[in-house]
Amino acid sequence: EEKMEYCSCNAANNNEEWIAGVSVGDFSHESDAATGGYTNFLDHVIELDMESEYPIVLTPGFKGAHYYEAWTVWIDYNGDGMFTDDEQVFAAEPSFEPAMGSFTVPTDATENTRMRVVMQYNEQGTDPCETDTTFEYGEVEDFSVKLIRQGIA
Image (cartoon, rainbow, N blue to C red; front, top):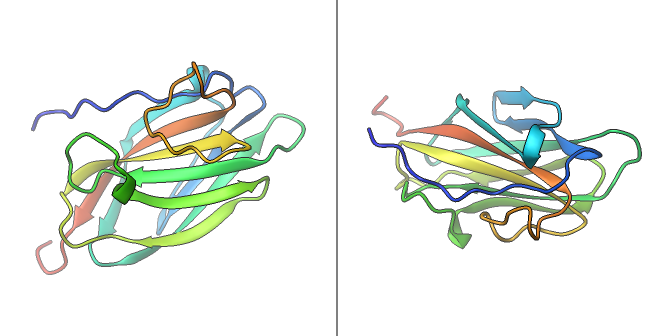
């Protein structure tokens, strides 16, 4: 199975704020600040059933003061190596509280793919390929996603 080449995405500075927790359905992952504003967590696999709705909780971590963080999440449903607007599964306005919501997995999705979580200081990240030249404060994490078609385990 060939590996997709995804665009890179990272924040210039995540010393003061970072992604501390990512929870989707039964999957939960906690982490500290990463070097370079990006972490590849592709060894962590989130299993989701197609046609099912899942709660999502995203928790920011802070060194000291709490900052307003906005969140955007994409899942590459068609497995083409790109995160497109219609693959944005969640977005949350800036807040220092954990962001909560839900999304539903479509039926026509590819089985093995990737989820990108972007936490950006004070503004919504709309570009899943934004890098540290313009993306100043925050953090990015990528996870593997395995989508299961019901009845064909």
